[in-house]
Amino acid sequence: MNFYLADPNEANRNLFQELIERSFDNYVVGQSSSASQTYLDLLELRVDIMVISNDLTPYDGIELVRRLRDVNSRPRFILTGTKITPEIREAAYRENIDIVVAAPLQPIEVKHLLQLIGGYVNMTNRLAAIYELALASPASYQRPQSAQRKRIDHVNSVLMFLGIAAETGSEDIRRIVKLMVDQNVNFAAINFERDLQMNDHTKKVVFQRIRRSLKAGITNLATMCLDYPENDILLEYANNLFEYQNVHVEMQRLQGDETPAKSQISLQHFFDGLWQESFRER
Image 1: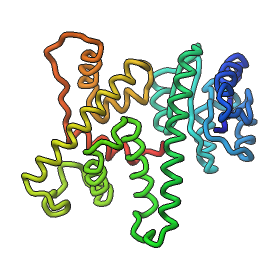
Image 2 (image 1 turned 135 degrees about the vertical axis):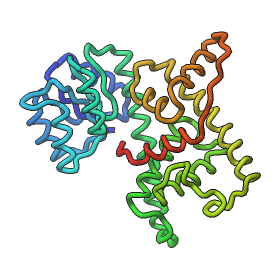
Image 3 (image 1 turned 90 degrees about the vertical axis):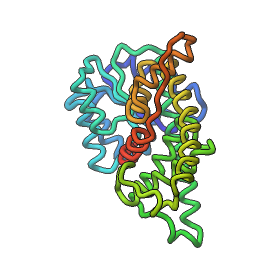
């Protein structure tokens, strides 16, 4: 994978470069201390992941991301900075920046962030390759339209991230979400009998399969939250898919805490969260 480092702090660039290049599959293809020079470099380079400081000049890191997107340069972004306020963090996520981390940077934290986003990029690249092969088949005219296909791609990547892409209920999840995407409706608006040929008994069986898969998913997510407690992507998934208090209960269970509370998985909350997540460009 190709990385680019944009940070006025040379020590930060050296830290990222050292950790990135420990893997023979990763390369730092460029670095700069200036936002304007970074912009010019990205017009020429193929970059998979950018590490950008919001402390850049003559304009900050978030503005640099906006300018790059305007010229269709769309790597994944890690934003750092010495003054990451809640307002800056909110603005960064509105620009679909993947990870926001405040300085000073700790080597173990940087290592985990690189592993997380690197795994995500590899996963989405593999999914894209699979779809490219599928589109070359004679039945390609049956594939969803481009925007819908990208949304389904992202749903699949979320299921893989949660570790439930191969669970028995995952096909049911994909089928329901595809209908929501195709019809642009939320979970409550689905007509299961008309559109999915599910009577009350069939729906009950399907929902049981899905709940078993989501139980595995919330356990996997809680484990990741324990390993990386400051990671914003994990907290975002915890809130949007399961409601954080349920993930917190699962974290307590994994730590051996004796608590009478049980995590309550809401199918409507999960599917509506996954549907909303499909609109994102990660």
